[in-house]
Image 1 (cartoon, rainbow, N blue to C red):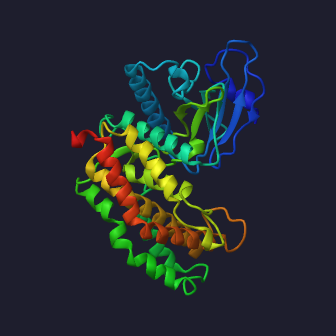
Image 2 (image 1 turned 180 degrees about the vertical axis):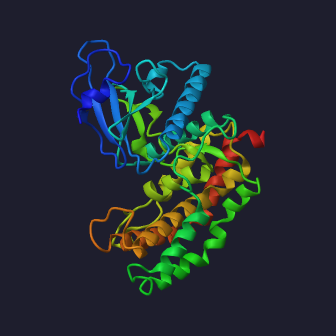
Image 3 (image 1 turned 45 degrees about the horizontal axis):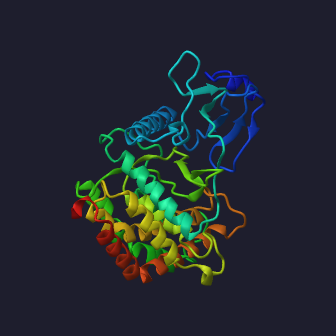
Length: 371
């Protein structure tokens, strides 16, 4: 396949050079496309993973609605240089469509945000900035009409669905590992009623549905190379309806872990309360306009929920014979499961500390529900 032929489908400015691989994403293949003439922008070309995102029309429709809404909100704020603070996707020539199909593969192109960088490692300061950035992301999208977006990955954060997958894996026992994991299975199932609490509240229309990012990592943010200031949130493929707990909790599950997600030494795994406090403070600093007291009080539970959910998913894959997650060695999903369960235990041990932090931030921030 000739990547230049794919590039030629899009309505770009300037003469494109040969696309070169960029980044280390696990889902989509990404390339940088430079242009020869000074003054013209460079571009990012991506091959959309059709195995993960089955409805590309829905995927791109979600992204276009979200980026359009963010640009509108930024404009109302009087933000300068909006082109660097929100992704912009390029339409096909003679069309408003923002992706093309070439040889059974789906491609899209966006404007490369120049003089930008991202981080991989998390510090207390970056945790604060990340909390503030994703909190503002939630705030800017909080007034989008209900039903505006669809689920790009159905059942992605559906706890009841994930438990049903685990139940099927236990009953199938395809890898002959159920007996070995019986204690962990019973422990997980013993928590299932509590872990489905928010899902039941949502179904009863007693907990708000928001627009969520579903991949809250520090490397999904861009910063200015010169000033080090935050620019924008990127990687919008999983933006869909959900609860804010999932975005808050998933960041703490990963960045707030003193060990690794697959740490074999469980002594390394625990909650870093400093990371929790910094992220929570940043999040509260930018969510005053919409966050409800109910959502605020459930944020610590969201950390437990997302860790529990990932433990369920790793265990399900381990019992199924490692068919979903890529593994580096035969017991990789076992180690992942045990590390998540240890992180969950640490979160449970820190429930009072987390609740105290949230209570303090609620009083300090004086959000709309306290005015």
